[in-house]
Length: 255
Image (cartoon, rainbow, N blue to C red; front, side, top):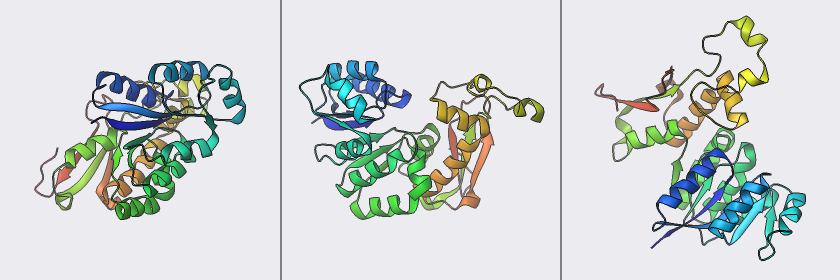
């Protein structure tokens, strides 16, 4: 039986990688819904290839533009469109890979309907981690972390007793300004800020990585995802980005 999946943020880097994964596992997954921002050309290709039942874009104007080429489907738009796709009971799982607070209400809508979440949106837990995790527990919904650091921690803890975890170690590359002076950082250009040394990501997360704000968000996210006290979450700068994250257990072992 194929798992039915909707992807919110399908034209972003995580959304596109998820679709590549679906391509490799066609016997296991079926696309039910796709939601994009404003990259209509890429989205048209995705809709033609995966033929999702439900589609949504960022604004009403973009929906009207898309309707000229896609005549056989209703095109949703805005936050309401995200929520409509997320709460659809055909979904077995919803990948939330949109940016900012746009992810919060679709996540809550999916949880209300007992649908599991693959979460690649930090702001959802930063803004409302207590609400989201409590509701997920009540509805017996799984929140599966997609961000590399939190996915690594999730895998390290998988099938182990969470109570035996002593410390979460979140790694960070340090971003493009890791070795720069304060003066160089003060006069940094947009181009330099977006020149991440290790990863190709969207502009917002790349800027957050340059300022290390991203690590702050990840600490908050880890706290809510894994129920670990902040004093037991450590950030380590790891320029090589080989280890995505680690867990130290009570016996001193590290996975």
